Image 1 (cartoon, rainbow, N blue to C red):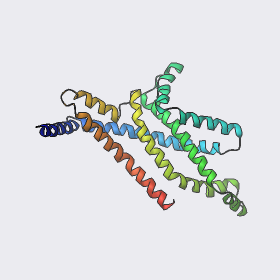
Image 2: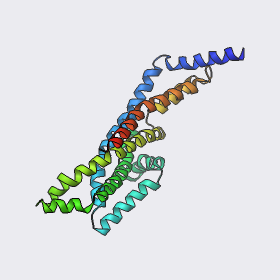
Image 3: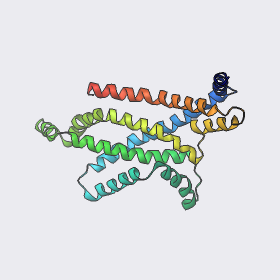
Image 4: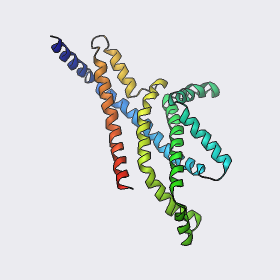
Length: 232
């Protein structure tokens, strides 16, 4: 009887996923997660490249400012940054911003700092003889940078950038705390709506959320490994 009851609970839990528009709602929530990540990643790559170049400059004051920004982004939990962006900006400037905008702002600041450090490390990894060879060929400093240094740096950044993207996708689950209706929040709503009749619904809902995150992150991680093996 106990085994039969467990099987019934399992089927009831699975049925919750396809009850009404629950499955479509979860997919829509996943799209919100992907959309926030996509915008944040594009902005992070753009500003991260600039940030990385600035960190590589010989100006000590500029490098110190960049270093402080990087350490703040690394030390401060993303959830705290989200609260500061969502609630702090409203109180300080009297501006009401959405949870999505606050999330993009925080992930862009964090992502550009991390991306900038990757760019800095990539530039420093280029041996000096590459610069010297370019000068020996009569190339100007800008030509050496854009035609020799930058292509090599970008190739080395591809695997680590993809790893950063997967980290950002997983971290977006925190945006639920600033009112963003994404996949985790929708999952919680579905579980709450079925808490009394189907208490085992949480297993199916969170199980599906795990699968959805895996399906988004796994291809990116797999691509990064293939690129790294090829040495691009």
